[in-house]
Length: 255
Image 1 (cartoon, helix red, strand yellow):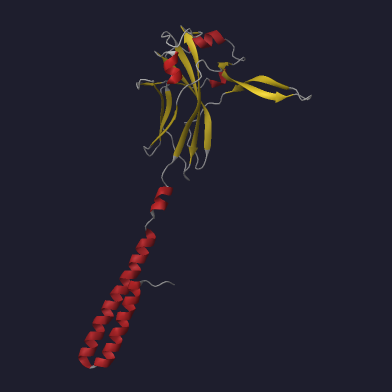
Image 2 (cartoon, rainbow, N blue to C red):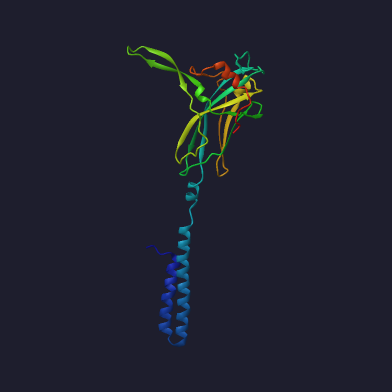
């Protein structure tokens, strides 16, 4: 058991009062002994109270451990150009009559021990000139899209060849709480208009998330982005052209 300096001083005062009372004797000795006894007890009890109080207070490190800490990353961005509801090849970097299906691959990591609820999020594009626009989100249709990947593979004879794969695109889940220490990744499907290919390619895509404690978490990806990108409608999609026309209708969620 470790005794603090204040406790040692309180015990010393108690001892000194007992010795002084024996030496002085009589009423004066009893009075001095009583004063020293009260003073020593007060010092000793006060020291114990401070020790208990300090144990009950969380340290700065313990307080920081309960603070939400969400890491947000935007890993890659692809865009698919449209004109009047149909896929359109880009004629030039400053072409102004296009709309874009934008696909952003994002990661979120919860560094805290407690789950984080993510009630609000928004994706925006900052143009090269500094102006910012919100990109509305398109929900629930990523099973109709595929991401093209080129894979370098070897056959059974040791011959190397390049194979094109169409990979599924899992939608990023921002509706359910993210458990402590967990990682979640996926794609966000967005819509952009009144932008040129150059503005979209060289702009900065930012995902902003506000948690249930009203803390803001931001992740960004600077250009150049892949415009046009490597995202195509799924071969299993029953009517690709009609689906593309549906994408221009104002039935999108902005959350």
